[in-house]
Image 1 (cartoon, one colour):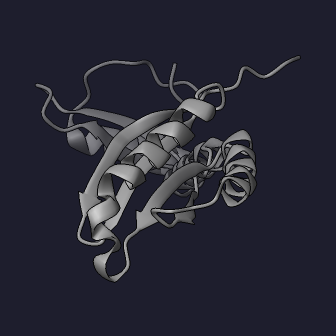
Image 2 (cartoon, one colour):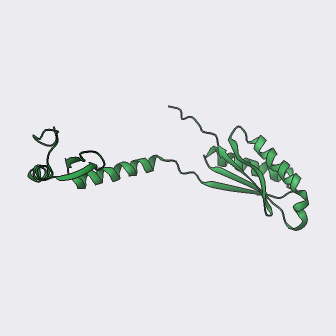
Image 3 (cartoon, one colour):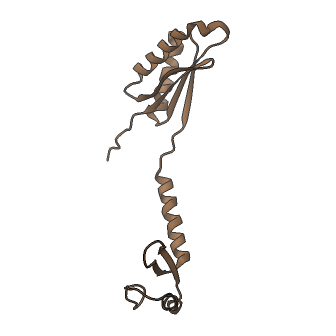
Length: 156
């Protein structure tokens, strides 16, 4: 049953429009490629409102991931490394992606192997909080590594 007292079935277009008009509703085409096309008698504005409401609810449920950056130098000291590692750990715990990079200034590009070792050490230290999405890769004067947080199971 659709609406008040109309049976589901095959109706000519004029009759279907008449039925919709009698009920003060709209005739909406659901599946135009079907043979015959499928239509439904409904309140079109309410239908659009419900659809927008569903989309908004789905959008609200999606998790927004932000990208946080941490910059190292090729000869970063142990204390500085530990300090920045702690920040990186917090970023991953919060559910943010992490972009760690070593910036080579001037002739320090000759230390690119030290930069790679530094980033791999960071990845190893943070493996329980996140996984490496992109291994260290040299792009111009930066060696970049991306990490994403490990999915955390919610406790109920």
